[in-house]
Length: 82
Image (cartoon, rainbow, N blue to C red):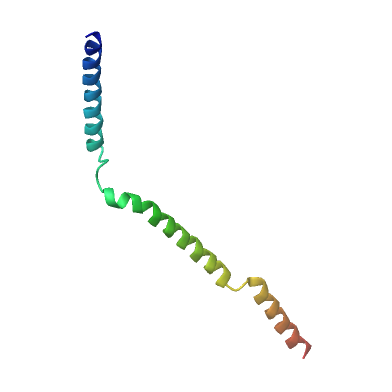
């Protein structure tokens, strides 16, 4: 009998805490857009990888400046010798 006097108030307090937690989750929009939240992480990661790859391709596709100046210097030397 003594355990009932302890368990009933304890269960009522737990019930009130559970209702507060659900109400807080609803008010803070925790249940909005449940489908896309899990996919957003993957999509953002893919987008970051694409940007890194594109930046790397731009760097490797640009001709180096030292090779161009070396070719220009050789052309200038060949003309001055003639």
